[in-house]
Length: 388
Image (cartoon, rainbow, N blue to C red; front, side, top):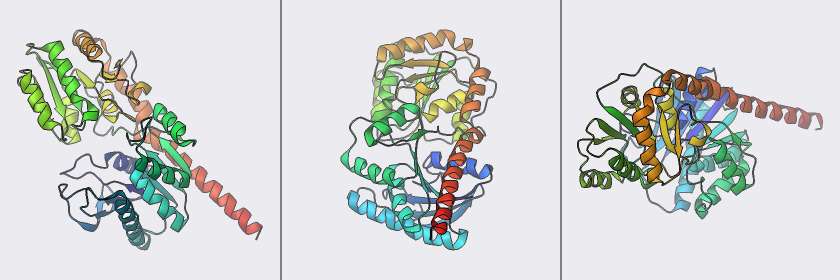
């Protein structure tokens, strides 16, 4: 079986997490014996420096074909047209060198939109996995709505990465999307016995954007632990809110307790989690919440907002759920964890996550969909031949 996986991009040393959900799935599929060809369409702005033009590399045994053009903020109509053209250009090279795939599997709205036009041209089944938080809302931007509607109507199967997200997709688009979660990379985020230090260490990870509410986390941390030098918070990630968060840390006098770590390799985050006592996510909206899953995979108890995805896997045995935007609940939960984090079984937490979200478990469900679509396609083809 040959799958063409259409993605936003792929992780590099400079942009360590870009396209990471797609890439994790590609690696897991390849591990299960599926031939995966990876097509990345990257039209981010000039600020996101990378080698431009069409490139082919091999990474972790996967053939990656990418087209990189620095566009940034251009009219959506132009971006759509260029994305479709770029994917078709990549596909010609892919088919020449790798052969025609059996399935297209596209991730995120924009990639799925482009893939829907390729599907029309080469006539093979299209699977879409949607992750976008822009879809995870009751009022979707019209341009996003139009793109998603076009893509979903063309798809043979639409997947959402959490049960609540699937409900939202089905309600907004009147389709029958199904739930298959994201993958946790257990080669990186695997259980190790905690390295206990002399401080209570809290970790949070995410893009430094308004949606992630790192400002709320810092305010709650101040209220819960101001002046307690034995408690520290490390925030991993980068984004437009960085300057604002630095000012907030200075305003509350938390320079010795709160640190912005920037964008780090997963291995660095995993090392910090092994040394931590608690993970906190204060996000306003999550389609899945993979950062929570990564912490849980290492056995770290989690506090998360009821932001969409985390409700599907956080329970009394591995953490606490709080209402979105509720600072008082966040404060009381962190204080509780300060007193009780050691009572959670880190090994049990890790084992539960492995049984539900390992690459092996998740891609088996995906492969099952591929086989079903190809079987139905073969059956229809035979009937068409029989009927002339």
